Length: 214
Image 1 (cartoon, helix red, strand yellow):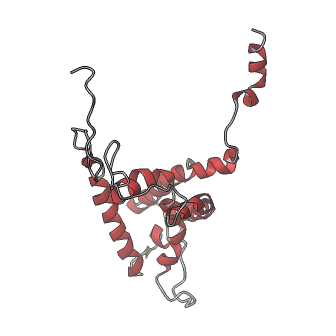
Image 2 (cartoon, rainbow, N blue to C red):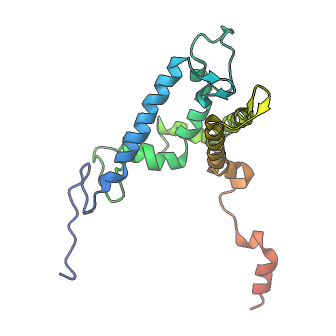
Image 3 (cartoon, helix red, strand yellow):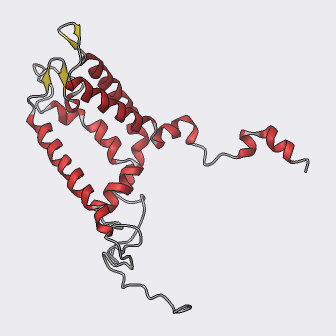
């Protein structure tokens, strides 16, 4: 009936007036990203089967000579710290993955979260650590350079040019990672995003001066 007040559901986890299957948005993230996390962890600790000339697993790039004993653990545990820090602190990943799928904070748009949870943004631990994202950007660019080196090298077999499935996989992988890295807000911050906002008057002064005569 028109004019009748809308009664909101009780504030509790999962409460909503939505009639669609909103949980289907986060379920694939939990399954796919969670599964990849388990796989990546196992591969990182495996410390084997990561190099088959000329292919090098991105998890172990740059290649650390196993004969050097200054790092007694799997080199992947040392290498993945940079890319993982960059991904884990990314704004896009927070909204699409961590906050919704794993922290249920909130589970989806217009879906209730736990009423006992107090939102403090990124001012408290551990979320305050996500503000270091712009600094992980420099490490991410370094690893992109290593991955491009590996992708180019994967086209040369015994000194002769060739194309294998691994060559295509490594090239597509680093291409997508490059697009993600160099379109990230951290690059915009580096290029001038330290300003809070841009005024059109400052960007196109002649256009605005011509408008001021009216």
